[in-house]
Structure formats: structure tokens, C-alpha cells
Length: 282
Image 1 (cartoon, rainbow, N blue to C red):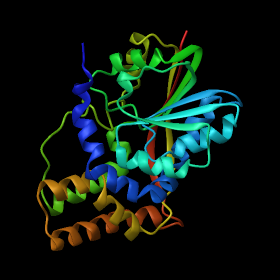
Image 2 (image 1 turned 120 degrees about the vertical axis):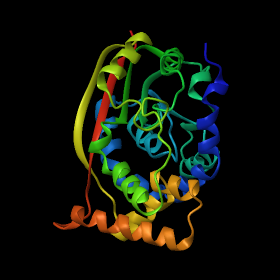
Image 3 (image 1 turned 180 degrees about the vertical axis):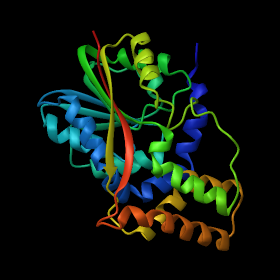
Image 4 (image 1 turned 90 degrees about the horizontal axis):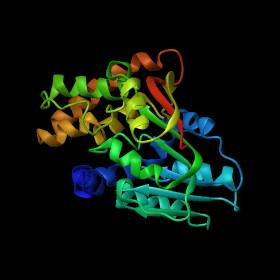
């Protein structure tokens, strides 16, 4: 059986500089990912008075939206392993007494009373043993509770990752191969695997809706290119190869050029394939 320490790589990653960089980009990322959060919430069937658990809540965008939906009679608990992101989330929710946050691994939760909804925007693909993690999360839910989360779909359909990775490979170097089925953004790209995991964890009425949508960056191609050099695969390559300023500048320009076709007909829009997953605890 997995111990909490088996998720320690993810805890370390999100607690260190990565968490700080994502926190610094919070406003941009919330705008970029708003269509994804909208999809999660539309499927969550939130209502006044419900208790909501937000897994991998990050800087709190989902918690704030859920808090508005459930009202003062409800409650929202955001869970994340990243202290920098949770610090920001607490600041953003400071005026909302029915919103709280927990710093820790969702696999080790022991909450009371149980929650009526579980939501997540890209927060559940990082567990070393996803069946165990979802089994333990299910234990925090009341009978009939509904789950609604978003995960990245197939890798080639998501230029948010593939475009900067390709640019980094061309300008800096090829990163070591990683296992896409291991903990990481694409671990839940296969709908059949997701359904199997949730079924083994005890959920029923499981559905995985593969959805094409556009991510909605607010700035220019140059703004998004800079963001992609700060977080994600391009940032990983910069750190791995200890790239110098000239290499980073070349990479940023290469990414910007690759992004231009996505802005030729109006505002910059980046296509994505998202798996929207819903299920119920019996």
C-alpha cells in the first residue's frame, strides 16, 4: 500500500520554485484556463448549502467560484500540496468565512463531516497510486456525492504543452524521456483508464467527455511566450540545461513565432483537448 511519501516528488515540485512561479502567474493562468473551470463547474451541479472539496485547488479560482455557488450556508475546502499557491488562495478568500484551505496530500485526508461535491481543475493527475488516492478521497464524500474534474486529453491535441516543448527541443536540447502514464499532466489522457481507476475506487455513473475547446490567454503572443518560459515544459528545459539569457531569448522568440498562427484571425486562442470526468459515490 502506498504511503503519503510516495507523492513526495510532486509535493517537492509544487512547494518549491514551481509553486512560486505559478502563484506569480495566477491572474494570467485563471484567464487562460477559465473555459476549463467553467466546464468543471457546469458539470458539478453546485447548489446553495452544499459542501465542496476542491482537490489541487492551487491559487483558489475553483474555490472562489464554488463559494459563490454554495453561498454562506455551504462550505468549501481547498486542498493542495503547494504552500506558495495556498498562501495566495488564502489571501484571495480572506473575506469568505465559509472557505478554508488544507495544506497536504489529498491521499491522507481525514475530514468530518463528509462533503457533497468533489471538484478539480487539473489537480488529480499527479498521484503515484491513483486508485488508492481516489478511494481515500471517496471516503471524504457523503453517499450520493458527485465528482467533477478536468484532465488534459491526448498529448498531440494540446499545444499548450507540445508547442513550447518542441521549441525548447529545437533551441536548447531534448529533455530526457518521461513516462506519460506516470504522475503528471497527461496521466489521465486515456478515458478508459480514468473510468477504470474510478470504478476500482468505488465510484459509479462514471463518464469521461472528451471535449475540444479554446484556452483564452488575455495577452499577446509575446506575453504567452514569456509565460511558457516561466512554467511548463519550456521552463523545465531551461532549468535542466541551465540555459543562458541568449538561449532563453531565442526560445522565447521561437515560441512567439509558433504561436502567431493562433492569433491571425483575432484574439489569441489556443486549442485544447480536455477530458471532463463525472462520477457519483454510491
